[in-house]
Image 1 (cartoon, rainbow, N blue to C red):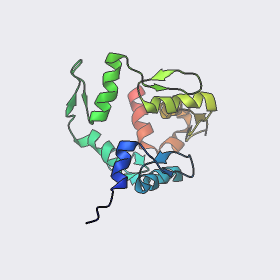
Image 2: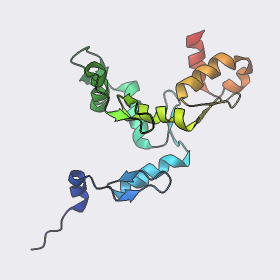
Image 3: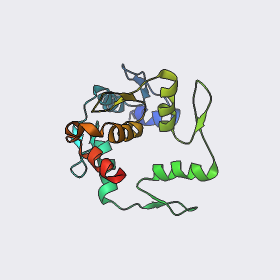
Length: 175
């Protein structure tokens, strides 16, 4: 009897990632994970939230987002009792209590609680500004800074803001 070695499963143990994204060179252990990732480079966000209108590159991101509207927060911090949608979010939060910062910038060595913060920080070195104000097209390194700028600085162009319901909500919260 011949038993095929489940190489895909074995990669979870070995850490091997033989599939690379042609755009950014990020590596993956499965071809399907790599294909899913490649879709994020298209710039298209075809999956929209029916509640708030936010759009996403992948269906799985929309599903995670929808939990924020409808699901409870089953994961609770044992230190401060703050609740989270996912176990991963709780794990990241716990680092604020322990002080653990396992992710570091390869350029300057600054350490962070989560990988996302390192990616955002890298923009200070690269000068990348992927978020633009829909009113004046000024570029920003973070989505939050872009939103604050657009609602505070470009209010005189209300006709341009009207198609963006999320910005309208932020504006009313500020005023």
